[in-house]
Amino acid sequence: MTTTAGTESPVSVLTTGLDTRVAALRALYEDLHAHPELSFQEVRTAGVIAAHLRTQGWTVSEGVGGTGVVGVLDNGAGPVVLLRADMDGLPVREETGLPYASVRTGIDAEGTVVPVMHACGHDMHVTCLLGATAQLAAHREGWHGTVVAVFQPAEEVGGAPAMIADGFLERFPRAQVCLGQHVQPAPVGFVGTRPGAVMVAADNLRILLHGRGGHGSAPELTVDPIVLAAAVVLRLQTVVSREVGASERAVVTVGSIHAGTKENIIPDTAELRITIRTETPAVRARVLAAVERIVRAESAASGAVEEPEITVINTFPVTVNDPDATATVLGALTETFGDQRVFTLPQPFNGSEDFSTFGTALEVPSVFWHFGGADPAAFAGLDIADLLADGLPDTIPVNHSPRYAPVPEPTIQIGVTALLAAASPWLCGA
Image (tube, rainbow, N blue to C red; front, top):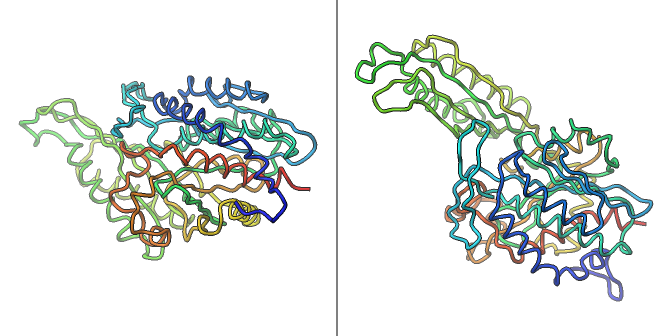
């Protein structure tokens, strides 16, 4: 941490005693990791969060947007700062081998029993924000204003819009800036963000293909939706390779395909679930049109008995960082961690977020950054410049992998410090 000789930085004040809190935060992290819950089902998680906030002295509201928790700490006149963490797990079977690995299952929106894992680091986000709220409550002498701590359900599947729809804007102090972060499979110590687009837009679709079922021994009497689905999947691979320019960015992924119940029965229908990631409105419109065109054309080519059904599951815009607020946050992070650990990202991440929903609804600046949570030993021989230019090595488990889990230390301490540092220009200003 960089300070002027003979002075103590605001972040130093806010992080006083954090070292002694890390052991308890690690225990909290391991507990959350072992008990993940699916989107909009985060009942236990919300209860743990609310209990910690009340113990710290925050005013707590539960059930916001379903299972969301909001804590408010008023510390006199001054700016209002929103800090956000997401808290849902994913339907993934954990393969980390950790002693606190999840063995839990849940029931998804379709009524299917699925394994559940914190495969995207949201348990780390909750832990870091609860660490930051504890530090803010313990060091009121070091800041002024109001902090709104948002623990959001269902990231990327509608949690932020649900909280807004539940009266968030009217029920809680209106923030002047919204701040959030996400742990990534980069080396511990890495912190990165950028002005403008920092994560891309997402469109998630459900496609129901209609065939005509029958006996597996007589396919000539059927319209096989599985063959149709296979044709759609293969043809969709040409959208990015043949309809998106080399200087443009897009991703089309078929993440789920379901059809049939038995090897000798040709089913009536097949279902695909697709995620589309784009950076600009023009590319988004082009890709969406191409996907629909291909689905309808392949259905017609297969002699489908009905038109395919294309349903939007959810959609999120590009996550955009306000340039001025981002410069302020980058300055605070650099002062705290040093310019060898804080980076301006060369381009947006291909992942998507609904965090910007808060800033858009409030009509205020928002800033979102990424911080590393992977063991640096796994990156031997590489530096950050290599990673930014070439991407991660294939040996590094990434978010949504069954083998992904941030290392608790020193990731927790860095994540807590990053939140406090990012908020300090507003909370610790004159």
